[in-house]
Image 1: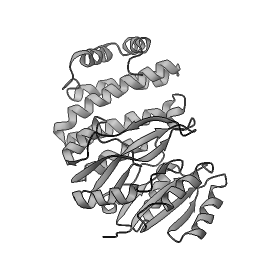
Image 2 (image 1 turned 135 degrees about the horizontal axis):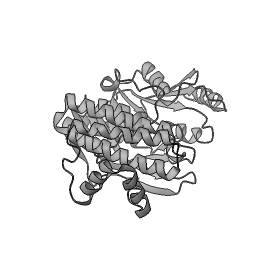
Image 3 (image 1 turned 180 degrees about the horizontal axis):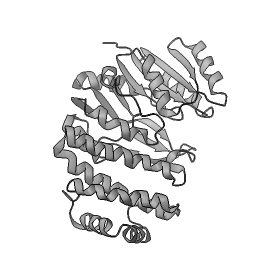
Image 4 (image 1 turned 90 degrees about the vertical axis):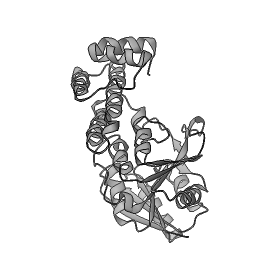
Length: 320
């Protein structure tokens, strides 16, 4: 088989990193590619770099658009993609030459709807920070994959270390204007996938930049992740009720983590109030199900005394 595979690359203000990213795509051992470079109104030399690459290789398509953010750029690329399979690669990252071929073969062999690979995280000097992977390859059904996603286990929220059947995601657009957009999107995709392959090899090289979302000071926009997790809880209640309490305790646990970050950053009180106001949602289910020991104790302390608990955890350097 030699199916056409689309690769969507959203691009904004990354001229320092873009050539390495695109070169890694052109160097793939799998050749039947449609590489879609989406210039999201980039103010630097990225538009020119994109056009120059398109002149060099007919597999590259370039679309220039007004700036609309990462989700909007991904949606624009997905809209014009013609491949039977599709992958999203961030423009400041790069991938190993065998990634697309190996992941495509895994999908065919496993008859799966998507495959997820391990990730090597590096800093801007290419020094390895960590590698996130699994001990062995496996195939998960829908409910197993959803549980792994909720628990941040064998399956992560990231969009970019995966290969999807295009028909699986075509009608699931990214939420425009959201931070942590992957959290809003991934559970809806997993909910439609019948079989999910997990690949232990780390093909994707993620560059942790200082100006990335995770490198920024804590601000109200980081609360988007909590909004996404609450929506995920409602989705579980409707589609996967057995996983609802699991999603609920992860949501409340994430509120604790965010309150710790907010208190540590000494943000304004409105953000603190926003996080604490979310705790009432725990009454919609059993947020303590499947918790035990210290984890359960901390959760009970948090819902009763959120600020005191988070200050204590920060003092003890727990969860940070």
